[in-house]
Amino acid sequence: LAEVNAVLDAAQGDLDTWGQLEHLISGLQHDSQSVRYSTLAALKGFMLQEKALMSELFKATSADTQGRRSRLVRALLKCCEADARTPLMAKISLRCAECLGIIGAVDASLVSSGGEIARKVHPPLSLKELPAALVGENLVRVLRTATTLEALDAATYAIQQLLQVYAPTGENGDPEVFAGLEDDVREVVRPLLSSKYVLKSLKPPEELPSPIFGGSGLSYRRWLLAWSKQLVSKVPEDHQLKPLFQACQGVLRHDMPTMQRILPYLTIAVVSHGSEEARARVHEEIESVLTQGPLQVEGLNSGEGVYSEQPARRGPSGRGGLGSSTSASDPTDGASMAELCMQTVFMLLDTLEAFVRCQSQAAMAAMRGHLRRSAATPAATKMGEVDAVRKLLAAIPAKVLATAALHCGAHARALMHLETFVRGSEWAGVQGCGDVARYGRNPASFRSLGKIREGEDLSLMVGAYVALEEPDGLGGLVKLRADEDGTDQKLVAERAGRWADALALYEQDLQEGARPRSAAAEGQQTGADPVSPDQRGYMRCLLNTGHLQALKTHVDGLLSHELVLPNRAELAAYGASAAWRLGEWDSLETYVKEAS
Image 1 (tube, rainbow, N blue to C red):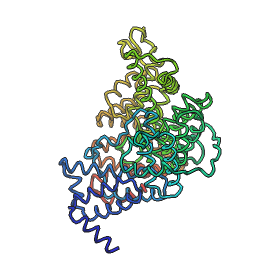
Image 2: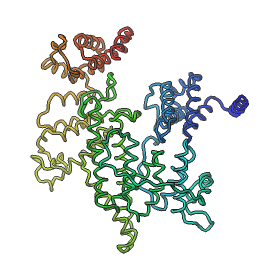
Image 3: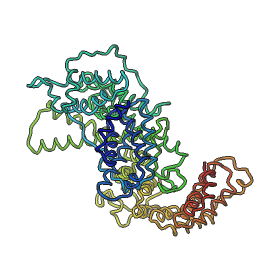
Image 4: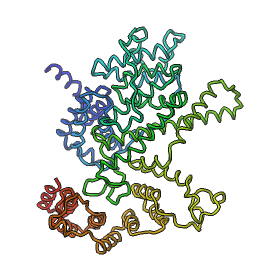
């Protein structure tokens, strides 16, 4: 390999250190997992060798440096996505974690998303555009990066079927679908125009239980694959996209982006052309994810509810506060699996809404243009699909959507659905609202509005405002309670940054109804009784007001009586935060050992 290394060194000889970094960032975005894996190893060595350059990269404020910094972080995060089921993917994720660990904690304001992090929602493509998009953006990528013969055969067969079924020949002898493909993609797929690959055997579709979500031992990938196969089996045989779905079934096992891409098309086909039983199954699966998913997240996050006073993204204990989401890196974690399933359902619903909106706008434009079509025209058929999809979307309660969004970290979405639920529910007719026809369905539009009764709906809205850290909205919302208590006052004070006021409220509550510690001191405490919210809030306020020595003394006093290990670990985390800021390294080491 000496000669090969010499050639590579000669090729990179003209690149300076910044150029080498740009070259590595480009390698992280390669389709091949092997290339990304090798690039990550080279990047790790580069960062360890060029420490001064990496320090400058994350300190400088120039536009060029900020662009490189953002591209590097985005490329590393993108590499962590498990796009294909291969043994190499786990090693890639581990190397990504090592590189991110070398970078360390980075201020989020120093890294711009560039509009690439957020997924854009596009309406589904037409029948003419979909095959070309699947071939050019998904199937060819799988074909090029396949690491197993099974994945290679599945991608080859899928491309062959799509070209032969959905690609009529144009005037120049090439399929019309070629017009939407890049030149390099055409060269890859051209031999498949005349290939004769066939399936050796086609197993009959397995009848799966409904709903699929909630089955024992199902990971996110297995759930999505099982649901996709169930939807394929429910698409009518005479549907135009049935051959496409059948051809791609083999690829679905190996490529998650392909599954996520065709899921909206499967849903539209089943909902608009399937049987009543198939439509009911689609609705049942979606509602199962949205109703059982939050329960799984709550149950596996130490039983913490959504409406919690634990600090969000700023507490020292490391435990997620309100609206925090667990890591999705472990596919065996039930809470992570539930969150991923809920996020997939939300992406599906967004795409369906975009489909309804796009087709409705096209229909309105046709009406304004005085275009007359008979009931049997494709436009009328398309509106039938729109009506079926709109019916599915309307059948999902807004409160269910809000609860699921709140549990998977989509707080703004949760607030949107909660407001929709409130304006359409009986809140519009609460006592004192008077004439709904006159004042509308917004309770705040009536000046003499009475206090809204305490209930789960109001608590969900308070939880959404707490997660969004909106002190003004939270302060106005708690005024609608029939009985405003100290908990609301503490929440408003904390979110508004009035830590001294919150500290006084916590001190008062602790003095009036502090949790007795005598049983724990005598060793009679048997259950894992959690640290009380008042104790946790009191320590949080001491930390944020800078009373570090007082916090340390308070933690030491609680630790001297606490015997339950989880509680001791949580208390030690607060003490470690205070010791770190005070520079008391011996105490910090003691707290760290206690927390671990």
